[in-house]
Image (cartoon, rainbow, N blue to C red):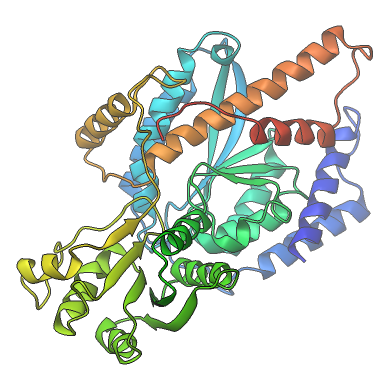
Length: 434
């Protein structure tokens, strides 16, 4: 249904652009059809608009910080890019938006200093407030595409429900999306989601590392201990699918939402010695406190913690019923598998920055602005570079074809341009800060 609405919307926009100057923009039948399409889109929303929880001061601050960069050097050719992030969601996700703004600003400034052809172009971001609501995000996207200018690429997408819905609409809307969040396993299939890319490896990569680790030490009987969260639940399902292809036995799989101790006791009752833990940073202290109380630690047990993202864990930063010494004792010897955030090389990347230089500049700006550090900032910085390099490559190729090609002055079709961009993003390779 979403794909059909998106395709119908795209056809309406093409008809609108193809009309000669001075002609009627919409016929009566088209106007009726378009109004019907908008009514169906609004039908996807909730019956009443959610009250805007808001951090208005931070949003204004965000726009004021980004805008001066976007209007510099008017002689540079504009590259319009959509940027979808939560601004007023009431879920706390807007903190991520504020935290990645310094990284985006740094990327835009570094791109401006590049030699031609990259330095001849200016990425102009159009912020869309997804509110972490799929229906509202889709309507905001449709409204912006209708107003124009023509967009080929979109950055962002930190809310899984929004990303899942938008990913289905991308081909019909002739859009590509470059995310800076690890896509869930169900969106990692390149066959079904060819238009969705990410600068963060999928959680499948972390699961593959866990399986390789189990095989390396010949651990054949394991248990999985997962926190009830959408992303972690998908991570567990993908791990189980990968384990089915091996000779490793899944003795037990337990999950918890509030109290981890009761679920952890079930693993002990099943005599599970190798435990794969999949839980958030805020729960690690409580989990290892339970492990200490249940005596699920020491040389007879092995914990392998598989992180969903690059943030990792901080043991003991939340109050619990265990002392720091007890927590350290329970966690001693555990493995931790997570996405590495920064490049290990100390040589300057494509932007001229080393990872250390980038991090120092980012933290300096965060401190000056009083915002929070986002675990996604480095991946955001590289995502802007991916978008800019791919768009410039396609734009330059279209110019050369029109100037020197056999079919001069022939406009490249929208479908062909999207295919060129798809190949450009797929083949983009450079040393970034991540």
